[in-house]
Each structure stands twice: as C-alpha cells, then as structure tokens.
Image (cartoon, rainbow, N blue to C red; front, side, top):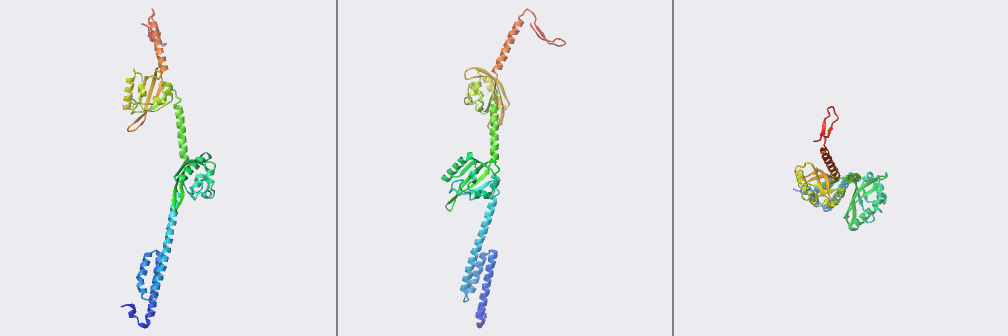
Length: 383
C-alpha cells in the first residue's frame, strides 16, 4: 500500500509537501556528501533513485530538474578543481626534478635572434654555474651573449642560426665567463618542440670544465712524451704481433727512422718492409727469433744488420717487449739503436789487436806481461 493511500484525503497535500521536503533535504545532503568526498557517481545514482518519488508530486519535475542541474554544475566544478590540483602537483613534481639535476635547463623562443631576448624559463642551477641568479638571467636579455667567450661567440651564434633555420637540434661546446671573473666550458644542447603552432627550444647546459681540463692535460702529456721519444737517438716503434713478421704491420714509428734507414715513416710502416730490409745473412735467424718470441711473448732482443735505402749496411740492436694483449692481438713496443759506429770501432780494435799480436809473436824473443801483485801473475807470454 502506498503512502498516499494510507493518508487521509484532507492531509494528503500536507503529507506530500512534507514528503517532497524530505526528498529535497535528502538530495541536498547527498550533494554535500558528494562534494566533500568526491563520490560524484554515487550522487547521480542517489538522485536518480529519488526521481520517481518526486515525480509523483506537483512540483516533482521542477525539483528533479533543479537538483540534477545543480548537481551537474557542482560535479563539473569539483572535477575542474581536482584537475587543477593534480596539474599543480605534477608541475611541482617535475619542477623539483628539473631544479635538482646537475645541469641548467631552459626554454627559449627562437622567434628573435639569440642573445636579444631572455629565456622563457631557466632553472636556478644557473647561479651555481655562472654566478648569476635565474631572476637576473630572465631580466637581462643580453646577459647570455655577454658571458659567452668572445673567441667562441661567432661560432655559437652561427650554430644557433643553422639550427633555427632548419628546425634542427642545437649542440655546441663553448666557454663562458663567470661572475667572479673565471672561465668555464659548457656543453649546450637544445631541441625544438612545437605545441599549438608555436615552436620553443628546450635546452640543457652542462659544465664540462673538468672534462676539458683533463683532456688538455692528457694532450699536454702526450705532446711532452712524443717530443721526448722523437728526440731520442734511436727509433721507437709499435707493431702488431699478427703481422710483425709476415706483413709487418707497424702502428707507429718515430721520425728518426728516416735518418737511420733512409725510408720515411710511411714507407717503413708499409707491410713487409722490416723483413725485406734484413741482411740476407741475418734474415733467417732474426725472423726465427721474432716468431719464437711472438709465441712465447718473451722480450725480443737481437742485433742484426739492415740494408738502408741507399744500399749501405748498418748494424742495429732491436729490443721490444709486449705492452698490450687482447684475445686476438698482442702489441709490441720496441727500440732500434744504431750500432754501426760501435761495431766498426770494435772491429777496428779487434783488427789492431790481431796485427799487434802477430807482430809480437814473430819477434825473436819472449814477450810477457805480468800482473803487479805479490807473485807477478803472468797475463801474457808470447809463444
């Protein structure tokens, strides 16, 4: 039995009004709960469940329409508020990430020439990089151009011009002057990003000073040692064990090889050159020793004769050791010294000694040499 049938006729309108009021209050409570908790779907379902009861009253249609419209507006506003809140949270999260990485990030509008307009955004790490705050950077459009080293500015502006005209990525290494008068190296990279028909460059600057200084120190050390090696009175070389005998691949040979052999560095490094210039009486023994040490990796230490480019013969001492080894290669580093003068001196001494020995031993007398000691030990007695 329905509520209306159980209600006396004179009180029916009054009871209906009370019923409608209860429904409206209940709907209002549901709306309030939905707003506070965000349970928007439950709010709509509750209104739909109450709609039939309200529809039986004279003002039911208007009440349902009003509550449905008001709930929809409230739901939309609450959702928009929630979206804005999530957007702010995401922006804060990503901003915190950007502003804590060890690099300077920036956004820039390429519509105007580089150095004539300030960045749309630059992260606070710029103060640590060059000594100027992000606010100063944004307020002074020409600050970046003034800080770029004068010797690098033209190249950097040219690189920006090419990137902008072609819509390509910008990359450059250059020097910047800091607020305290120092100088740093930076790597600057930026990528064009188009959104809603507008293009912006999003970039990052990284301090490369320490890396540059290390590279310069390495180059200086290499130059010092190269100068030392190339001024030594000997030929230094590096060769690959895979071809040291057959093919003779030489990775490096010092310039002194020209004075020693008459061949240029390029000529001496050509395959097979070393073996081809070995004296024919020494070649077999020297090559055999090279192959043996290639297998055992023992030091190579041999004296032999070389035939110079002009056909003359020289004596050399060749010593080499393994300096690097991988699965498929062994690198030898060696030193070739010219022993020709020493050999000639030794041979001259030996010849002189032989001549004088022959002369002494043909004298009609006994020649002897004694040590100056207690028993006069004989060092030599002629036959």
